[in-house]
Image 1 (cartoon, rainbow, N blue to C red):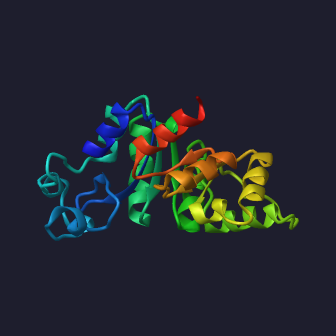
Image 2: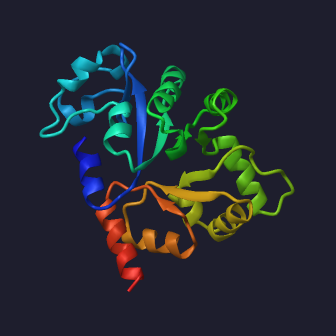
Length: 219
């Protein structure tokens, strides 16, 4: 939670998180499927209740639920990566319960998950999955394939948009009416390069660095 508070204090109003499902069915905002890497404790999120997860010591921070984030940061847009089939169903329900459908984008590395989200909740925005990104790459190479349907964004590793076809990819995405988000970018020089190419969003572990780069470019 401290990370979200910090980003908000910097003026960030678009946030990204992964979500997992706790043992008792709470959608938890956390990157890893287990707590080991950052807590000094061990345990899988899907094997722990939300009360147990709340008790995990993370210094001055704690693990939030997705509902808590949507309610606490009510003026923020969220990009949410659903990490399992099980969490997707509950995530879509949480988005509806929080009346946040107009300020979220659901993503996943699973095409099946994304298809299900679009079929059951077509009013909730989604990003392209691996197949959609593949189609977008082919279009940037002028291969006549249709663009992925029902997506608002191409969210791609920084190497794709910083590489040889990067400018063509961004230009074609914009021509297709899609935005491009790059992840995970922590290097200032790469941030500059991506912004030069017209990338619309940068996912980073260092939001203050991105803001410094943007401020310097606007001078």
